[in-house]
Length: 414
Ligand code: RIB
Image (cartoon, rainbow, N blue to C red):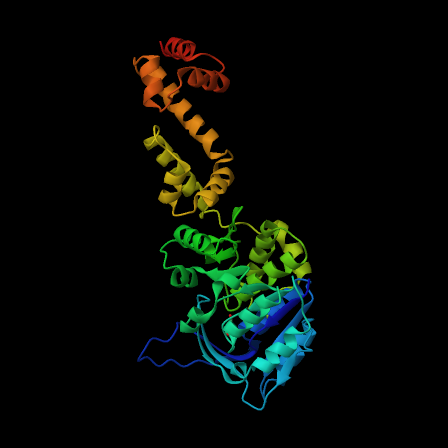
């Protein structure tokens, strides 16, 4: 499958300062660099360095020729890049000593894409090919529509987020790769789980990759939910970390690798990128990423967010022993019942009905050991209508009848 990235190319004017300049403040610096950049260019180079065949389409301005050279060196195919008689797009980037950045953009050549250009370029691609897009060129909604009509798999990185994103038909997308701020804006959810839940409900066939900075990343589709921690590196410049992630993740998919391996490689590649200055120049080659992976250490202080969800699921079951249902749990989590069923399996390694049985049996076992309630009362309290069914399930799980269990526990305690 081919990858077509229709995206921006920027000249990045990068200034390193003690801190990001606040409104009304003036700072001076001796540290200035001119780097190749632009989310489009960065993501094309990242996917190409990750080993994918990438075609970059878009517009290059009068002063953008050095960018052509950089992309060619990075292994990107530029057959569909058009020269326009406009100043090239550029970014003014402040980088603080802590490695944080602040960016403003001049669109220039990046806003010169025409419908005729889009139609002509898309002629060269077919069903199943990937169309990668960001929000730094004009005509993104048109590209989404036309790519979808051709049956291409559209991968959107809605970055930078602005009001133009609302014009895009998200039901045409196959993949959405976004950060937490973008996820909140698009879904109107508050935390990552809620955002993923809302997006999953709204667009059931959409595959979502949510990057959470030092808290790692999440992946979610209709069947599975994955988490990968961030790797520990010392940050020098976070510019293009997200672009590196996107390019690497997409290259992994195009190579037929699993989303889980995609997250692993993308996390490693972006960790290496933040340990180096600049946008495109900081993006590592696949060989560097594969060589670094065995030594990269996850940021352990951030635990698997699924652990929290697991607790929520168990809390729900324990406090609704009699009338717990998949629909009730789905409501509590903000997911669809179908997604909730899969989520329970992924999180707790059991289907919903078996998990409910397990929770009921363990509450019953506790009551048998710690109270003198009759077995019949306990069976009723934990939500079983059918006494013999409970006895069978209990025996399978604990190897003895409820009464024998009580005796054994009391004997052990006495
Ligand atoms: O994502 C980083 C990029 O954003 C920079 O290279 C800059 O050009 C801006 O587009």
